[in-house]
Image (cartoon, rainbow, N blue to C red; front, side, top):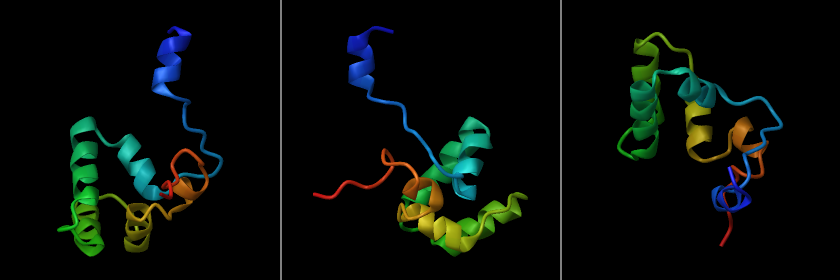
Length: 89
C-alpha cells in the first residue's frame, strides 16, 4: 500500500480498552448476521429490549444496557478509542 492510499484510508483505530459485548458479537458473527445486527442497532424502530430479545433468542449473551450504551457511543469500547468517539460540531 502506498503512502497516498494510507493517507486516504486514515489511521487504523486504536482500542485501548476491552471492547463491549456488542462489539465482540459484531466481530464474531458471520458477516450476514453481523450486518443484520448492525442494521437493528442503526434502526430506531428496534428498541434495546427488542434487540436483546432477538439476540438472546439466538443464544448470544448481550445486556440491554450494553446495547443502549453502544448505540449512544457511550460503551467502554467507544470511550476507550479516540477514533470511535463522536465528533462535536
